Image (cartoon, rainbow, N blue to C red; front, side, top):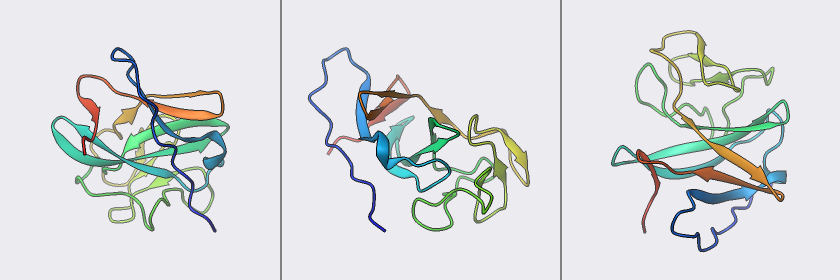
Length: 135
């Protein structure tokens, strides 16, 4: 299985908060996620984007119970049914469309990252707490 390709971000306009993430085709319903790094509140964090029931969603890769990454294998977050995101360490269960915790140990839900899908490209949106990682 090939890993989804990542599109290098184009030069954004100074006032454009969108950052290119991947091709739309890289996100398959209840399939593999596309991971990416962000600065959240001044800390470098891992994040992931998924497709669920035809729509794209993104979250910080942090369980709300204890700030550990969720995936049980790289870029694998869905349970066997493809209906829930699971924390491999704690067993917390999250709704893919909202990040709301619906079972297991958790404190609230996942931190959601706004996505825009347009022209066969998925973009994530920065804001005052969420920025691209500078290299």
